[in-house]
Length: 55
Image (cartoon, rainbow, N blue to C red; front, side, top):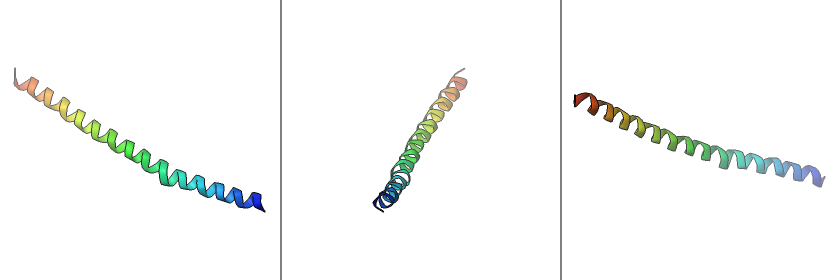
């Protein structure tokens, strides 16, 4: 009986870790990478426009 209860508690803890900690952390990392990509795109576009206008 104790083994079943501990197994259920282990599964609940694993689900809490996955859905409560890992998934928000992964979305946070993707959000930061997306912001960095947008900033890099704007920088490359600005350098390209300035390069073409200066000719």
